Structure formats: C-alpha cells, structure tokens
Image 1 (tube, rainbow, N blue to C red):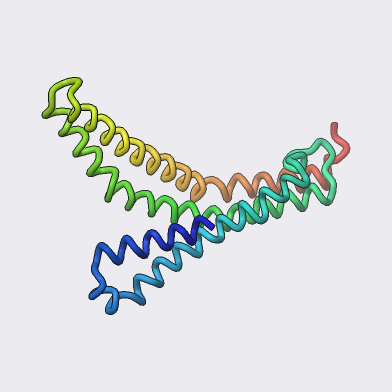
Image 2: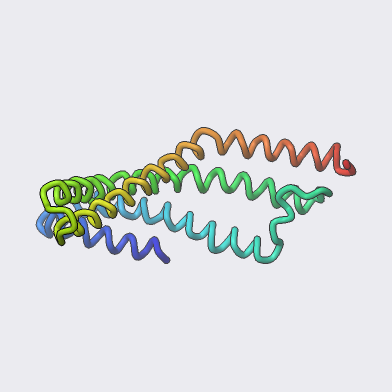
Length: 181
C-alpha cells in the first residue's frame, strides 16, 4: 500500500535529516509518530479500497437518494455516512498537517528560489526558464496544501452536520414518506 511506501520514505528522510547518531536516542519517538501517520493513512486506504470501491462496484450508487427507500438502501446510506465521518475526520487532518510540512520544506523554498531566479535573470534565458519551473512546482505544492486545508476545514466543520441531516432525511423518507411521490 501507499502508506507503507510513504512510511519508508519518511523514515529514510528523517534518518538522513537528523543523522544515525540521533536515531538511537530519538528513534522510539520518531517511530511512534511515523507509525501513527502510517496507521491513519492505512485506515484511509483500507476504507477506500476495501470498503467504498467494492461496495459501489457491487451496489452502484442508487442507495444514496433512491425514490423508494428500502431497509438495505437506508442502512447502506447511514453506515456509509457514519463511517465517512470517522474516517475523514482523522485522515483529512493528517493529510493537511503533512502538506503543511511538505509545503514549508519544499514549496516555500521553491517559490522563493524560483521567484528570485526569474527576478535576477534575463527574460527567456535558461535560468529564467528554470526559475519559472521551480516557482511553478512551489505554487503547485502551495495550491495543493490550501485545497487539502479547505477540504479538512469542511470535514471538521460541516461534514458531521451534513451527514446528520442526510441520515435524518433518509430515516424520515424510509419511515414516513416512502411512497411519496
């Protein structure tokens, strides 16, 4: 899974960053943090690849808001909504924090270096072109970070409310308005 690859990359990166002599002293703390991140990524991966995709492949998406609500469609929508809350509340926070660090370590310097390369080089020169590409990579990281932060804010503030309204709507539809229209 991608979470295992990410864990190995982060372990190697941190080892190279702090040096092997510090790994012996701070290794348990570093390992616990990396394993926590890996666990959250594994949970998200598992939810997507072992629950959501197979379920949708078998059942389709007609259970989301069907005209005629059955016990099966009611349970499918309710369980999916509840599971999404628990999975996404933790996972989006981890993604947001990771992207903040990635943007701070790589994106911010790329934007700074790229902008200065463009500023201090002649137009249409090789350094100017390299500066444009480096700046673009930094901008992509910054935009990705902001997008994930926005999604995380939505999940943290509004997803629980939206899924509660969705479940209430499905319940009312199932119990009282199932023959309507």
